Amino acid sequence: MRILFLGTPEFALISLQKLVEAGEKVVGVVTQPDRPRGRGRKVTASPVKTFAREKGIPVYQPERLKDREVIEKLAGFAPDLIVVVAYGKILPREVLQIPPLGCINVHASLLPRYRGAAPIHWALIKGEEVTGVTTMYIDEGMDKGDIILQEEVPILPEDTAGTLHDKLAQAGARLLLDTVARIRAGTAPRIPQPAEGVTYAPPLEARDELLDWNKPARQLWFQVRGLNPWPGALTHWQGGILKVWVVSPLEGEATPGEVVAVDKQAGILVGTGEGILRLEEVQPAGKRKMAASDFARGYGVKEGLFFGSGT
Image (cartoon, rainbow, N blue to C red; front, top):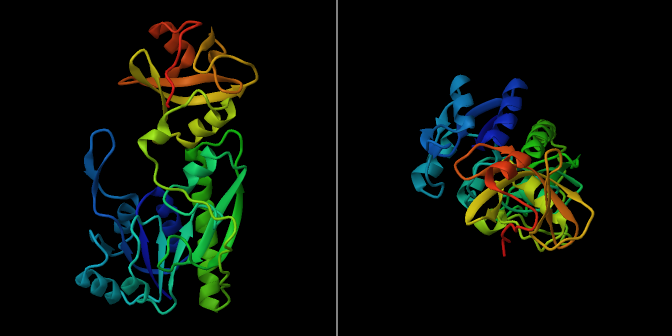
């Protein structure tokens, strides 16, 4: 079976690696054009492109999928199946019609929950205890296609978007191999998504990074974990921006945003709309990450002062 793989970031790389290791015939890889990445904004190839080149798999990087020459190029790979994992663009109808066995996607949620671009972040931000991965047939809707297989993945209290990303990438790759095998055998199910339970995971915006100290401590804990390691939660301190990386919720009462204690071991304790939030690791603008207690000593954090709300 000839497979054309569409994907771009690290999440997609794991699935591509597993397909190649399993001996699947990946006839080509389509990935996003090289973009500026990292702090230096150096133009860099995607992880998927780098791996494909190492394995001698043809790589194609169109800016748009709707152009006639692009559609003809994709058809020229003569794929039996198109596999899409975090590619970054919606497939037009003309592309969906190319492979006789259809186009399938690995999505990092238990559809129909968290349709959209940022399912890992939003599952954490919303305080979910379980998420998972779904393989599905792609149609012209936003993650609305028929479900093939699903696998649940528990969200642990210590999970961040980074650790959950890695777990779901591995689970998604395993599920993809099973899905491809079932499609080859003609036994892959097609389960329409239920109309009930639909939620969305839109791209993160700047406002999603701001901590609103009027919210409960547990909700802020979810938010910080869901934004770690990217893009990071933030708050205002003395006219500047402070990134907040590690926190924990505690019981107690205090005015939202007020510093109620500073301790070498405990970090900085801040009041919220319900409970206390302990800041454990933070990062001032232009500086490295540091223990919250070190930040307190260096930046004059004292009881009775306030962190600015994200409202």
